[in-house]
Amino acid sequence: MGAGSAIAVARTHPAAEEQRGRLAVSLIFAVHGVISGTFAARTPWIQTNIHASTGVLGAVMITPTLGALAVMPAISRVVHHFGARTGMRILVALFCVTLIPLALVSDAWSLAALMFLNGAAAGAADVAMNAHAVRIERRLGRSIMSGFHGLWAVGMISGSALGGLCAGAGIGAPAEFAATAVGSLVLGVAACNLLPPDDPAAADIAPPRYALPSRAILGIGLVGFCGIWAEGASSSWCAVYLIKVAHATAALGAYSLTGFSVTMAVGRLTGDAITRRLGPVTTVRAGGILAVAGACLVALATGQVLCIVGFAAIGLGIATSVPLAFTAAGRFGGDTEGSVAGVATIMYGAGLIAGPAVGALGSTVSLPFAFWVTAVVTAGLVLGANALRAA
Image (cartoon, rainbow, N blue to C red; front, top):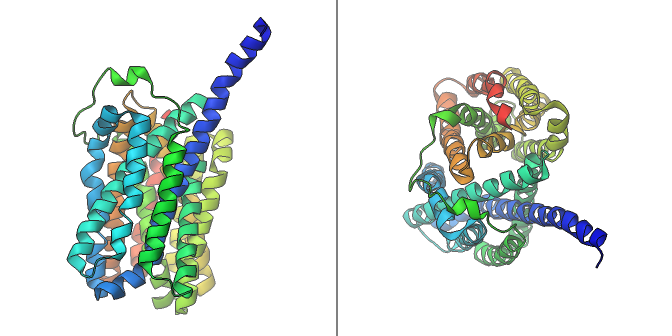
């Protein structure tokens, strides 16, 4: 081999490694979304199987977020112990495996305990995969984070669609969950083998055993908080809003959730190109304006079409806020997992309280009032976007 050929190989090898890493992270995000969507689609089956009322099921649904919040501050230390690639392999496998028993329990207490574990595994894998995404993005030198989150949304839509097909075909959740978990585990673990080797320098300094969000990343976390609040409020209540306020059918209410999810996925899949052109601050600020307008339209509208348009605008407007918050956090300091975990903890907190808060406001005042409040919270994307300059 001549000197020129050797130089060419040396130059192309890092690029090939980065592309393999990008493919790996893309697959991991999609697998995470499939597992999440699979469970969400079979919630009615789960409710019937454990003979739970809507109120009991609602209380149980809080436990996954509690599990995630409990473990995320410790993930940096776990990844440091096993290494980034091996840690990711373990965490994605755990998340897939914890899906299976969710369809096997027959009472609410058991389901709550298992969902706490599933949520812990989901949150842990979420932190690790976003940290890998930050590192791949940094090495490529251009915005790609939004696309990863778009693939998560595609995975979730795919998982929920498969759940609908299985339900229609009379296939029980135990068989579906087992098959989905095994297939996702094989794909997810195989994807981890494509991740770049660990950085030896990352092993030099051990992170804290349990790191809560630092004051330095609070502004970034609050931007993500506002985006997740709007997402949680809309995804949890758009169908109910259509039925109760706009007097839509149950089917149309369900389609409003599909519309919200699709516009958010489209916004994320196209968000990288927009971010490269406008920068993260302008992208999130413009999206925030659109999302606030959508929330106001929902609060004002009584017709079905305008409500659906309003929720779709929220989904499109908030699409890039969470991915860009993760990017900004991951580039803040040397401990990528620790910074990502800090922001994720704040954002999961928003996910924990947004749905119940909108429900409480809807019960005590009205659902339109609850979305006026959502519009105010979402305005934080516009006001706080400067915190993302690190992205």
